[in-house]
Length: 601
Image 1 (cartoon, rainbow, N blue to C red):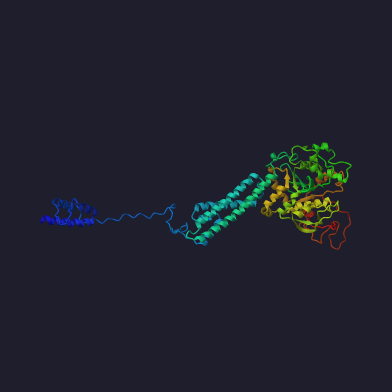
Image 2: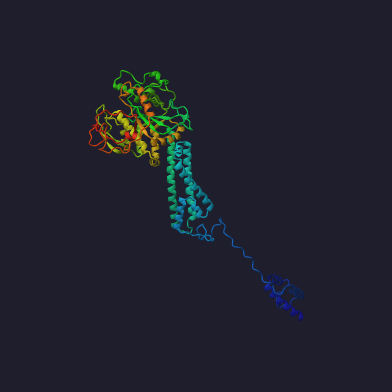
């Protein structure tokens, strides 16, 4: 009995221990140690084993400690949010909570980020990248403002160098592309991620408008730069790639005017047209420019001059020792021996006589005009009158004072009247078609009147070529200029010429007055020695400043024709006319002072 009671107590203790300690209960419930039935008496060996385990096991097991809790893991940037989770804006507040911006705020921030590239990246959380972009942008803008205000001449001088023009076009495209990338990236950081389709569409629309606002001007700028590149490469050829028998053999690129006090340019106006055979020099003007001050003197050569001389060292001197002309010809026969015919007739009669040349006619006229005026003609600039109207239209027209009726058509010798007239009037704005007739209309006018009008047309073009017009219409101007101009000015000289042109625009442009009667310019043998003396005297004199009224000219009804009194109520003077001054300012010559004698219809 004692042994059975001890076995029951051991079995009860074993059950209690199995509820508190699973490991001990598992061992106690092993089928090899525990009887299959409670009623079956345990064997002595089993009872002994249970007793031994009870003695070795503590009465109560200590409560188990909970496992240590891991700190919450922050989500990694590369981990995508769970499907269906709402994602806020990418920026977090100082407390670590995401900032969910409203749509209007995101759009305003995107706009400010476009105006100041990099600002949107800073606000969007990419502070280092945004600060770098913003600093770079401010530096570029500051550099552009500084160069525009202080180095404008250098910028325009660089605008005639082909390699710099090509680099500029690439730079403009790259800056525009990076600007657009910054705008798109800024908006992706600033947009509210919880917005619906409508909000996202609105944001995309704003980005599209900003992108277009940057891409369109950049494309226009690149096209203008490429148009300038095309103009420079087609009109101006490098010194070693072009041929000229009369221009200077070398160019001092560093300082072209170091030993050249004056630059003498020959301006030629060709009368080529769709129904004309060949080209004649309809306009011949020498522009002598003071390279220190920019003061310019224009010498208009009458196109009917005969027996034009050649220098002693010219090969043409052997064929025309007394000048280009023949004795005993009728007035009609003289037409082929005048200055206007030299451009075409001499190269046809003596091809290649001056040596390799890209424009033999221009080289012939350069030599002869230089000898007649006593000047060394450096370069020529030829304007084909067939494209004259195109350049005027590209500039938006020119404004001139019309002092006399100008015929648009008509043939004086055949007594065929013109169909239209340009009537007198101050500050008339002419399109290309009417400006061409203003410059070359012959009916009822002599060559002196035409030459004055041609000089005024040139002045009108210079006045119309203001910076605003050049910036907004440059592609059309460059296209017209490419088809309008021919020259032997090398590319290497263009930067220096641009800087000289700035001096000319702010200096005095005057006309050298030629006494037609004294110099016998309309006779068969003009006085070329007297012409050289007149030119030398005019260039040595200081140009007179324009009169106060030269800009707008006298108003209609208050003009003062030559020989009339300027004081109201006083009779007109009848004395001899005052001899013309050596030079006449072009502002005065082109002012409004209509003549009393007008051509009849």
